[in-house]
Length: 272
Image (tube, rainbow, N blue to C red; front, side, top):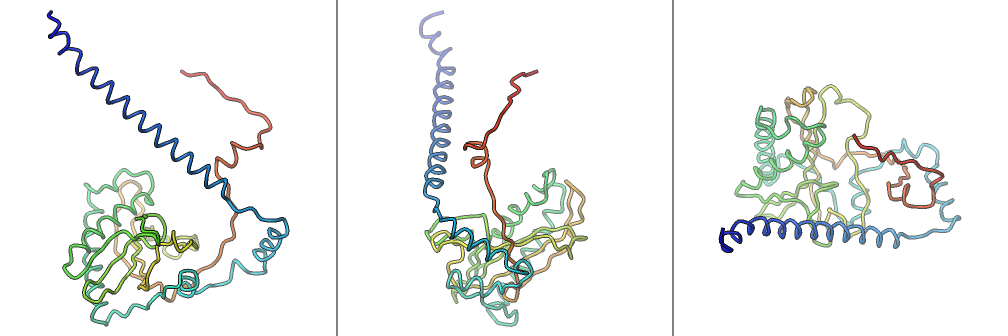
């Protein structure tokens, strides 16, 4: 075998190793950058005095606070400065938006109840919400009078997590409608478990950046795990919604396992 033939033989393997090495280095760098940002955010967490903590706890322990209803519209306006406008389906612009949502919802039910749906085989139905979001967004955005997109935060970053999920703009009037698709089992329609939440955020990280209608599009399903079929839809106006406050303190794995809490540990390093 000539030197040229040997070179041609080993060249693909060398190129693969170089490419794989570059990929691994890039992935490691991305992970390190994410860890660095998390550490910086953790270090910048505001510290409060014991007296401040006691005052806050006293407020959260106020009698019947968890049972008190808060106007969602007032909560949004107070926290963001933006009005939650009521939806009048007889208004000419609203009727265009409603017709587009109706057609998109019918389309979503049809394709996501079929055998070829991306939802088939998912472990949890909650994982399917993103597929409904994408289907609705694509279908509504195809309407000549509307734009439909993922909302941006106040600092201009596109963000999927949290309310609202979709932003619909009527091009001619500039009117905005926020839309949240939610999936739920039909028999649990009257359940008291949490199915919608709104998290207060800074103006930079809030996804609510303008006056808008806030709508929720519920899709009930039959509960057949892994083979869900959707039996209809309900469009709700959140302008009149009352929400409740659940005071909850939380900690991450980082908070639990990387600090000074450890008493003793054991690691089973044996492998089959």
